[in-house]
Length: 376
Image (cartoon, rainbow, N blue to C red; front, top):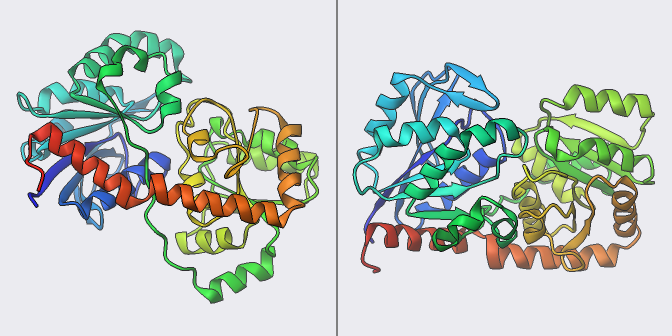
């Protein structure tokens, strides 16, 4: 099998930045390794030293982020130089959209006729005014792309931007590699602290996660909700919980993966209340599905309801609706058989659509098409 070299371009990456998109890139790189793909990630960082890191998923190349405007990291000439060097060895450039600085960067680093794949992660939702000004640059980027990957048919059908590029669209979801079995001693430690009858949220506390609505729902819910993570909304959410006198909500902060997976194994199910289209997919839902947990999420027209099918893998409720969210949690809290049925279906759906074998093979096939590599 011919080794294909792919350069992934995104505004930030581990270890300096933590988030769902960074995790989706990491999981993609690990999944495609088994299919003869050598991955390099280019990103900006406030402290890019060392500038080159060897990670399990591939090589990471970092240039300095000199400024951040409306969540857009901006680099300087050093970023152009380093990205151009990385692109010179790539069979395919894969840009993870949106990152407006990369739209300026790409023409400076891309070789003529070098295949360009754009992973369309999300519409620009919050910065609508800037989005209008950015539209010509976005149009140039998507017109230049050889293919545009969208992570779910839901998002392809509901994005106004993507309606103009149907002939270029390829649907390949994000994936999640199989997680190791949790350490029994760690599971027992968390069982002593949390029990095994709670619903779990995991993620960065961002404006679009719907966590204030989850706290409102907690007031109507008789069970316990545990939150793992932190972020820009963390202080406000903790203050809200204190003001509401919520005794059934536990904030655990950011935890190592081993602790997260141990707690997930103990949970009754995963709750994911994101209420805006900025939540394009939901890696946490994949974690719950892989762990055979029932899922609770909101219908926002994105990949969250491509992962979680109402009445099959869990329950889907309207966004920004605490009573409906509380009712869904109560339904699952009172029916272990229903939880087991939804959890088994979640696991089966992960194996069918979101496993590294399925997604890695799909990307290898796409890379072969773009590079005209003979199928072996």
